Length: 581
Image 1 (cartoon, one colour):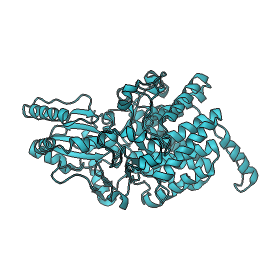
Image 2 (cartoon, rainbow, N blue to C red):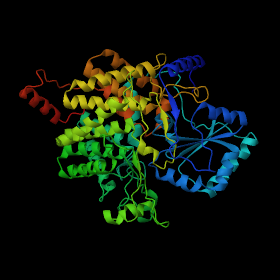
Image 3 (tube, rainbow, N blue to C red):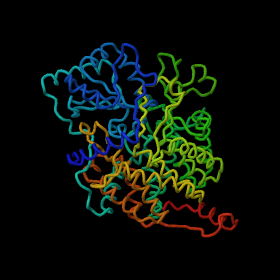
Image 4 (cartoon, rainbow, N blue to C red):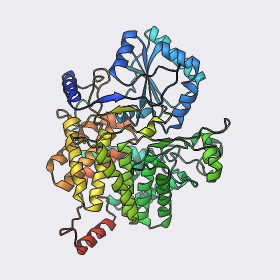
């Protein structure tokens, strides 16, 4: 579904004005590409115009630095001379870092990483694929697309990313909530405690798991509670016993879960900070219910990895650690390296490179994770790390108009060998605003300090000023730019759900009724039946937001001078109470 043409024109006019006045946007390729290689373009209208003028197909390559399959595709397939020649002759190739551009990353997230989409010269998607392909598989696919394009036989892909819903949903939110619950419950595999056939994926399990904990508490359901704890326990399988930290997917597989012969196919030795944030939250929630020391020990291992390997001197965190070092033997899989049992054995082959990009949305996830760990374990060092990171990001990235930048180029990044060009975009993106807004509210509630509430309100107001659709409600993924006439603006379901949850919590804490109405209108704008069905099990944040909006909240307030020991003791008692609502 496309937005109304009049709305698109209006958005474009507003965008041109806003861009001229506020935003300086530029692309910077940091050590990306190779001389004589593929002629990669940035995601900008000039690239799409080139494709149309030359009647070439468009190849869109979306991925991230910490992605094993992305790195393999770059090293093997995109450096193959036959692939290079074929793409440069018949395609306009566009490469996008999914974390630097979260709006585009979300748009193609259905195809995982790397996502490779093929578009006609007019930007109509005709095909998309997930994962890497070797040259012997990729070349026939490219040749087939070229032949069909020349014969005018390519047709629009029915699975292309959805854009703006035609109208807000009018169904009661409880019915929408029940639909999302059903989708998640149907996808839950209680044999391996995951959503899907292949076991836990620590990058995406977080919101779905928190939804289980929330429902278990809401209905005092011991069966759901135990199921949530069992899922939290799967994080132990993904823990690196040498350096600490959580892998995307466990490397060492128990024969009771996956046959040994499939282990290498299933294991994903990637360490992203999103994995670490989800682990902090999952393990902390399990500890609150059980008091079992094993969760504290596991959180300490996650913390050790974040501090030793991923922390910038300013207290923020780098994005990813790649899957293998430069010195890996040619006949080894990356998993073989990570299965080495000592620090000395690993260092003999080198250290897998760190992606030194620092993203606001991913840092916000870690901040919230440390806050949850402080709530569970009472370790003030966890809270201090969250505070330092939040202060640093506010100091360096909060814009005069109240929104947060997603990324800022740093010197270390210029030395990184990147798979995707890092695009510096000085514009508001929905995901970092909503995620960082959540982190600020987490800090406000755990400290009782109003210093976190004011920037949260500034971010919310900036979101309304720059990203909110006053006509049809809901938030755009970013400020529509000059590609909007070709690639329709998108209101991503999960990011809008996160925004709705943020606004609802802000309403509770400020008693500003305007924020409550924005929360409900946002969910109604994006949670349409066709979009919910399309997203399937990828609806954890939507499920959480719907639970919040359809259940009464519980408020615990301490009235008195914050310096009084009695007031501090009462506040501490409130924090100790396990009450997700």
